[in-house]
Image (cartoon, rainbow, N blue to C red; front, side, top):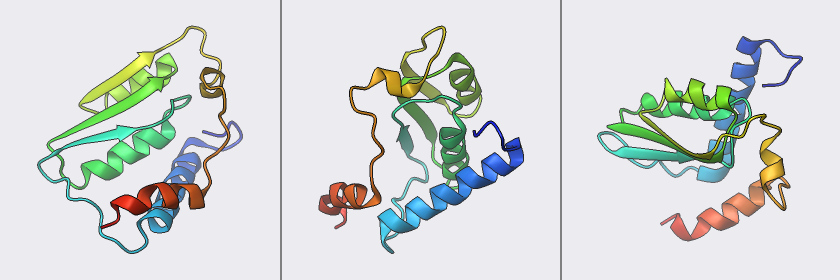
Length: 125
């Protein structure tokens, strides 16, 4: 969450961004059916965990049997907060002190919306 933004506003910003991405990437297609199934949410890492927590909460409204959150690296605080929301958290590294997610990657440049749409295209059937 941005340091200069209050927690409720930061949560609202995250929710708006998730909704924007869903519209951009789904292109009108319905969301996959998750009711009664195990849903696995994957992120590149958790600094604050706000985005993953928002994703878990949004997914819960669709009644999955279980929600598993999987990340390669997380801060201890973010991992612990997520453990109270997801049914299972798979996290490979929780370094102390936690510096940033990006230090665990050779290339941590942002993925553009057009790149995501291109990667998802083969599964759009």
